[in-house]
Length: 179
Image 1 (cartoon, rainbow, N blue to C red):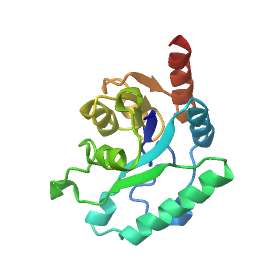
Image 2 (cartoon, helix red, strand yellow; image 1 turned 60 degrees about the vertical axis):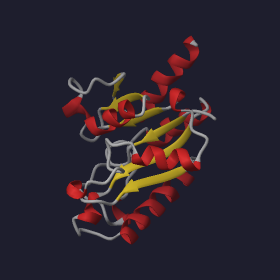
Image 3 (cartoon, rainbow, N blue to C red; image 1 turned 180 degrees about the horizontal axis):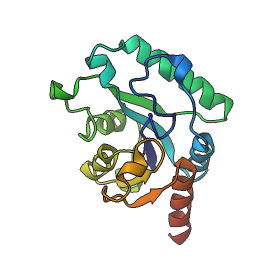
């Protein structure tokens, strides 16, 4: 069992592009790859957890989501980053599923596949639903101010509010140093 960083996709790892279904639109945020490399150095596994309601709304298919994730994986590989897993909710927000963040379904799926130590893991994202996901499973939660994060910085109840993914890794590094 070891800690994992559960990372939101849009607005946290890649540039927010409302309902991204085209792999050509995948663009890493500045500092995202460096932050992910630093998280690895700190002993965290890396898992992407993302709501993709564009599928449930009929904007694009699950094949399009897979193509976006392939492109993201390619860009990360070039930057020296490998993900341990990608989990997404394809459902419409009104579908009543248990995998749509902030519900814990995506984390539970990852736990079934990976040696996740929830007590030492963290959720990092740019929306209140990311912070609420962390709370739902008893994990720390960090809000990044990229994507929609700056709009929610004062109201999420996050353990930390930081500028970006690299700053989130620096925050966690300081915590590790204190232990």
